[in-house]
Image 1 (spheres, rainbow, N blue to C red):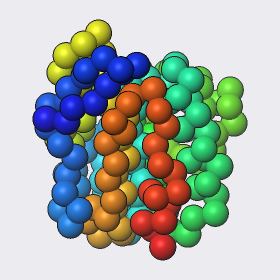
Image 2: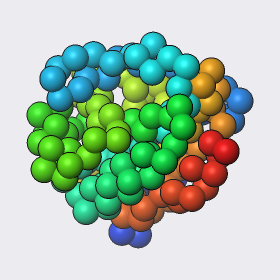
Image 3: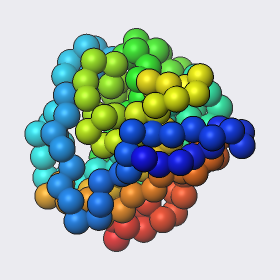
Image 4: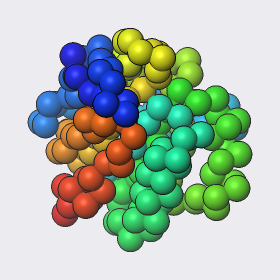
Length: 165
């Protein structure tokens, strides 16, 4: 279990992020058009999973914008924003913000959060996903992870992107 905080208050997840060197588990996440995206949808690409509780919070919105900005410069790489938000809300946010260099997918009916052990188990945020980053190579091997220790803080963008080089 990861011990993290939300504005200084203890919050726990169901486990710990996948280990570097592990293979990321397949998933079935939903895009804003209600299409299911799986690991195969991004076959042969490096992946940055930007995981967060809800797009409707300032920090989550900032991380989606920052990774969108950085994604345009990355070769053979896809940034995948993942939350429990409904696909419609994610699509509305991306359209309003002009985010076109990322995939924003919903975990509202899949096991992505549990499979990657980022589901929050207690606190008022119970059931949502913690703020985390998982980076994989083109063969789906985990090459970097970050469980952000304070949910209100942004991830270490530079470290996540450096792992791809």
